[in-house]
Amino acid sequence: MSTISERRERERAHRHQLIITAARELAEAEGWEAVTTRRLAERVEYSQPVLYSHFNGKDAIVSAVALDGFNQLAAHLSHARQAAAEPGQAALRAVSHAYLAFATERPALYQAMFILPTDLKFASAETPAPLRASFDEFVNCLHPDNERRELFAEVIWSALHGIAVLSGSGRIPPDGQEERVDLIIAQIADTRQDRQRHKRGPRSRT
Amino acid sequence: MSTISERRERERAHRHQLIITAARELAEAEGWEAVTTRRLAERVEYSQPVLYSHFNGKDAIVSAVALDGFNQLAAHLSHARQAAAEPGQAALRAVSHAYLAFATERPALYQAMFILPTDLKFASAETPAPLRASFDEFVNCLHPDNERRELFAEVIWSALHGIAVLSGSGRIPPDGQEERVDLIIAQIADTRQDRQRHKRGPRSRT
DNA sequence: GCAGGATGTCTAGCGTTGCTAGGATTTAGT
DNA sequence: ACTAAATCCTAGCAACGCTAGACATCCTGC
Image (spheres, rainbow over the protein chains, first blue to last red):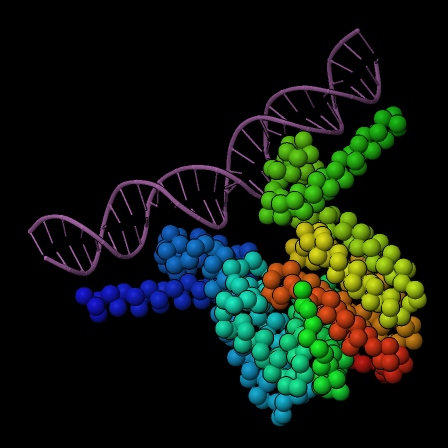
């Protein structure tokens, strides 16, 4: 009575992942507007309703793809950071370039993570680990004595996200990304700035 | 034979603007997912097909709203810049705060301008004037001797857009926007940096 | 004043979307 | 072998963007 239900559960988990992978591949091949429940069901060779026995709806599927993406992003950034010779500005530069490369090379995945509406909870107690891990890759590039590391990381991440999405949608020229990243690193994360200088008394972040 | 067709044209232009306004108001009241062609038609008290005699499709309506938004944004930023005592960093700070205020106070409009798919052409020859005007409000805050003003403006704009959209979608905490803007201004647009120092030889922007 | 053509508008409907109810079929436990 | 439960699919709903074709209205030329 146990092994049989275990196998069932295993198969179910396998199919769960199959749906996520199929959705991502379909989005990467033809864009998210081509990811309909019918086409997705056809692709996994099941009927539509089975999708709804795994996910609450289409948004939940996109969310699952996004969560998967955050795992990949965290690994990608971590790899870049550790490949850098030493921590500090070099690591930050490496992570930033890795971030932008991820955004440009996996546009559909990036879209699921940051643009499409998802159920994911950010910046709260129930934030999934991969999200926090990705963010921490930026934080860990900053000097531990900088009491405003989180703030710096937020701003750097925001700036990178901004140029990623604006160039991705053609709102700024796709060329010159390199220059922009260099400018961000040089200006925002100037190592002269990333120190106790930025210590401040506790502030009310109302 | 002339005045009558003139009146027709006038009425048509009026209705054109009516549709745009109705779409914007509906989006601001209930979000863009509530803006359907049926509801929009009902709101302007015409049937669906008249929308298509004015616009090529729903995307074109969103684009028109976005273009209208860029006019408002340009005026908003221009006002903030000229209200600042003198040009330079103070003006940049004023414009940046005005930009973020616009994004947070008019989220639906901002979404049409920057997130939803539109037909607008950015960063090209046929870029509509209001888009360029908005961008130039940033450029004009930077020192004319800085040969990389455009690059600086792109990065500042991107950073602001990043924190606007990430906080708007809950991906970074909505609190602390003030701190982030201050950091961007202080770091990226440090007046010591915004000068000939940044002159460089022509670079290959491959 | 009145036919006739052009213009403007609406009704109705097509194909597709996300999602679900209810029946059919297979499987498990006694 | 028989009942019950779990599993899956067929069929369909309401709403979507969009369009064809019928109806009404208005201007023009006689």
